[in-house]
Length: 298
Image 1 (cartoon, rainbow, N blue to C red):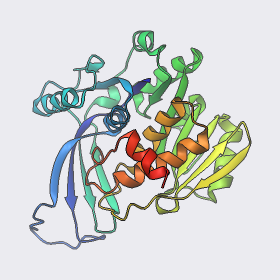
Image 2: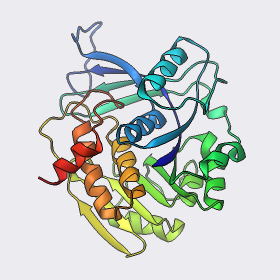
Image 3: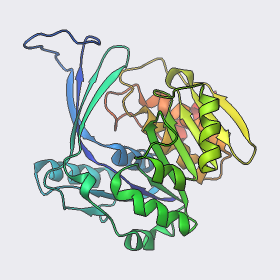
Image 4: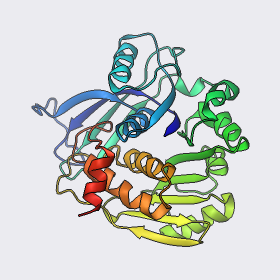
């Protein structure tokens, strides 16, 4: 399955902390508690889909610096095509993630100058027409791209992550043009079903999914005007929940693109995400489709 993915790639450092809030001390020694890896929403999705067996066309931006070289090396190691990478940034984006033993996290993301970049939709979508789905992250350089993909009839999918207002100005372009819309329940100001109904009435998305952590995921299908609540999958091991939403989003796209009904696709996606959070790092812990299917069959 060929899928277009466009979004952020960065270097992520994860730091284990005892809990939140963090008490002040001049120095800590969390032995084996600090790690660094290539990450970023776009990369996480591209890697997850590649692990699941998809052919990914990946579009993103880097700088010609040491971090950029590290990212490029990792992409090649992962078998992700690098033809869609542009080297226009002054410096490659970086992030730091603090996480506690309960899996709670605080993310600091330094995007550098990536929000000032743009892509040519005609060039990207020339090969993107052959893609089953365009998974376009809510970053500035994808605004024109998601509009153009929608006009061409390519199935569009985006994750707006933490959303508290259906009229959110930053995310409006993405919500208006997404056939498949994902978000988290972390900042929803009212009951999730009511919030989703309001989103649908405004934007008429075909599918809306709300990731709800340990409570599972809420699915709305416009075709059936029906909700389904899919329970979370507990593998018995939770290390770090960062990247769980990316895992849920990407695995849903994979199974949906293969022809699974939305509910069946989401049932498999919660398994994929549940296994993923047993690893430390947003881009780590992805399993294969075979593992998901064997787990689902139990």
